[in-house]
Length: 307
Image (cartoon, rainbow, N blue to C red):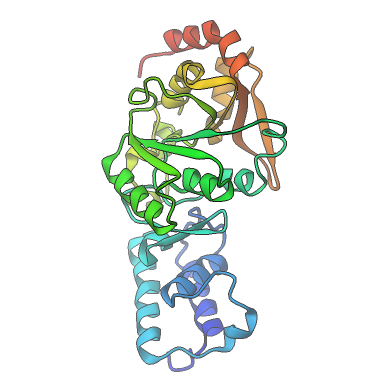
């Protein structure tokens, strides 16, 4: 270990150990080097965009010992790095991350950074909702990128809302972001929005049973949604019109449950959003389309197999 001295040394070492241990990378990163960089830089209280010249900086003995302990813990426990260091980055912003909510990682970050273009082009947005907010990352980032928006963030989990509240304070957005406890729309009676964005649970029961150990550290409540992954998405589709203004837009992430949703509702004109890496199971729908196909949505819900 005495040969490991610099930031680059430790990143290379950690990445090699992670690959050798067969870890899964699905919480903000898709490879060992990025995951090791996150662990090193966050544990040293350095930004993720640290200039490369600092890679040759040497760690103190205490810093090195702390980093090596985290590397071993990541391997032995399979805990996500974001939980180990207490921080994840989303839409270019740091968020406190711990087991009270899922690690921030939604592709919706790209939409926020791009101003939801072209989906919101020419639309006036005054109020937005982040439904199933978890850590609050989507709603807080929407507020940070759009200072004239008033944003509500809602979740059924008191633990998640407590974490989201800490992230609101961290970014000093208390005057712009309001956290509300709600089982989907049940606690939002009378509230209407120009934009509703949701990353609800959408993992099927079978998929959850097969997930790598890293995901066992996250709250199951934030992941699973029945045998087809659509338990919450269908309720959102049914109830969203009552909470959208006339020209309101709904954006929902359903991940791999996209196929099941399209098969269940073939007549609904889902617009599947293209990201830089392709489609990611995220659709956009106008309020008018939701109203037009309300009967189809209710019928699909009523005719689904019980599970």
